[in-house]
Image (cartoon, rainbow, N blue to C red):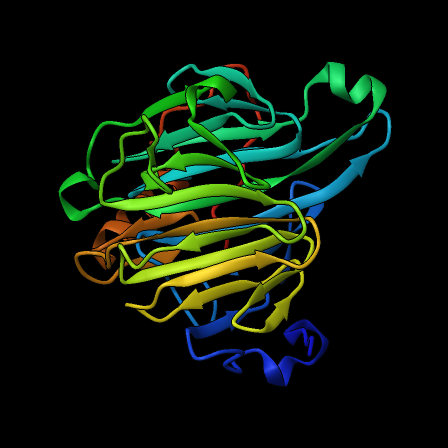
Length: 306
């Protein structure tokens, strides 16, 4: 029997099988001229391990002379993690970084005590029209690293380990999964992987961490006899061995990690273990005390609310 919580909001927290703790259907938000689907944070769940924010970008198609335009904006206390399935984004930040990201690569920007950045479609891509499809997540920094120096690291498509065979292709983005380990350095223990399965193939989700989830991207997967289509965050109970089987060709993200070392407060683009630190960041952005992004004259003003 197949059912999809997106068809009925009353089913958003229904247990589809004994191993699933929560099912979150993302809500739509507008960023830079197109809609994203935001799974975290939600009313049902604030975090999964250190993952405090999880957006599906697209799939979107831009006509000629149009594209993504996320103006310079600030962050503290987190790492932004950008991973694309299709298209390209040009990242610019207050460290002087200017770099495009393409599918299979990874942008890992650590805000620490404060950074500003923009995300745009390049002029070359605007001239011919383009597509955009991917995931952007935020990983909260451990308390000891919240005030670290800002940094940006780009990992190319060939830098991240890929596992193939038995109808599956798995790119390990961060942490360890299915016996492979990413070179990405993280502030706390976590795992993050892009999993593609042929119809009939399966992949395990081992109980290495108490907080684990998958986000369904494409196709339909079977978990303990229940079917799930794309666009759902499935959060699992701790301790169970999970097998995810593809009913059709399917793609999903595996994510999770250890519980954080205390609660995190989120306001707009700021994440911190201390409310007063967020108030300071708000005042700093409003007073233009963050470093600026070279080559950018626009910016997103401090909003009235989160």
